[in-house]
Structure formats: C-alpha cells, structure tokens
Image 1 (cartoon, rainbow, N blue to C red):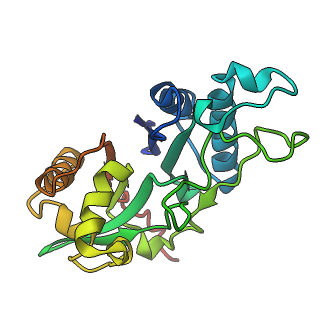
Image 2: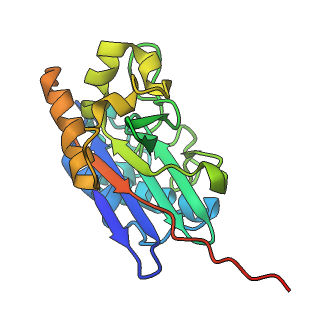
Length: 240
C-alpha cells in the first residue's frame, strides 16, 4: 500500500496485490508501489507512473532479461495495481490494472453510498488479463508500455467524499454475497453497506469494510486504502 499527502492537499493512494500462484508476488507488489510519485495531476502522469511500476516489476525476473529464453508464466513475478490521486488543478484521477479495484463513495445522513469505478480485468474463467510484469506478446514491444484502465474523470460537482481501493481479498466476499452487480450498485446495498455508517475518517471506513469481509468468511490476503476527503472551500472572487 502507498499513501502520500502534499502541502497543498494533493494526495495519492495505491494498493498492489500479488497474483496468486505466480512467483514472488510479495516482491512484485512492493516494487509496484515503491517508486510511485507523490503527485499525479494528469492522465499522462498516471500512464507514466504505471509504466515505471511495470519496469520495476519486470526487473525482478532475471529470466526475462535473458534474450531469447522462454520462461514459464507462473515463474514470472506479477502484480495488480490501483492508484487514485487528486490535485487542485488536475482533479481526481484513477487508474488500475488487474482486479484490485477503486470505489467512489458519497456520504449522506443515512450512511455511505457508492460503486466501483470500473471493471476487474479478468476473463470468464477468473484469470487476470492485464497486470504488471506480464511479458509483452511481441518481443519488439517496449516492455514499459502498459495499457492502463482509467476513469475519464469526475465533474467538480460530482466528486466523491471518499475513495476506496480494495484488493480482491476485500471486495470478492462482498460481491459473492450480492452478486457481481454489487460492484456497480450505487445504492446503500453496494459498497456503502460495507462502510460503518458511524465512521468519520479513513481508518474507521477501512476497519468497517475489513470487518464486513471477515464476517463473510474471506480466506485471502486483504488490503484496503481509503482517502476520506472533503474538497477545500472554493475561492469566490467578488464581482464589480
């Protein structure tokens, strides 16, 4: 997990989760977040952050660096990664690869409501279709270039109060109870039902989500990062 807050209120949160069955997933996840920047203000910045993270994960596999050597997929370190960032100028940016997923959540008098910002990158059999460290199909392709899924952006009036990034060990038990459509249900039956309605900060929201997943019997490692965030007051310029 990675978190950073700048003096002007800009922030970055991220979660990386190693792929089950692949070698050195713990190292791959650490490499994915270890060099993330403390500010991401544009889609281009997000793409660069993922490309550099991919290079760090690829560097763990010395076999990939041996030209012409064919390696078994399960011997290659791989990791998912999801990053959310906000800056006063660039607004909210979210990107991901794999099945570590972002959720946008709004608070109200009756609790929290929100939904997943995208779709897990999985095939019908549950295998991840895009992740960091995946070797390029074309040997001539630049291994650092990756196709990052990104949220197009939020209008200023639609910005969420909370951004949640959850590994599959967190959201899968919740989705198993409510069906995969739960991911995109923006009513209180969705991700909001996993948030403690009395929670007033990021720690309280994270603890509530993990407690709900535990109650449903999850049997995987679990990581959740939460930005409980209020936009700064707007500066109003007086008229003539």
